[in-house]
Amino acid sequence: MLEQTLTIIKPECVENKHIGEVISRIEKAGYRIRGMKMLTLSRRDAEIFYQVHRERPFYGELTEYMSSGPVVVMVLEKENCIADFRRFIGATNPAEAEQGTIRADFGMDIQRNCVHASDSPENAVREIRFFFAQRELV
Image (tube, rainbow, N blue to C red; front, top):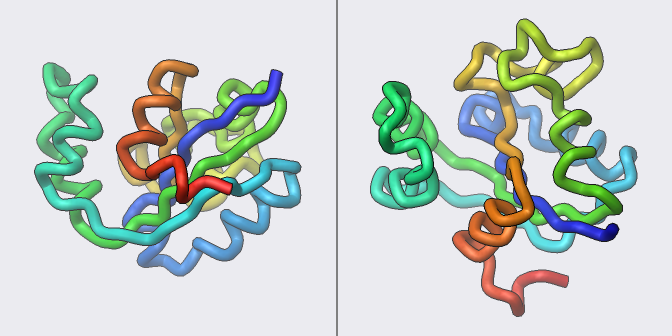
């Protein structure tokens, strides 16, 4: 089934100049980029985007981090995109990520793990709508 997912190249990955390599790997793996933009989240935007985690102890640290610098947000499309992309990028904790995955190669720790990925079809729809109007997707 053709699906879309949202990914975010996180602030440390942008700062460390890995945008091009991450995008190149994504494209070479067969994902189609349907929308892409660079922006800096306000703290309030990060709080709204990550509201599903607001009761978790890391919520404040996460929203502060995600609003600390520019990010690149992308809508990707492929068969079975959500589950496939999560396998492709590797485990949330880079120390546990499979060799050769984006998180294993570029992630620094469980929070600064280079990329965010939608975890379900429902969250993918919500996350895509948060960043993109329909007219921005090709």
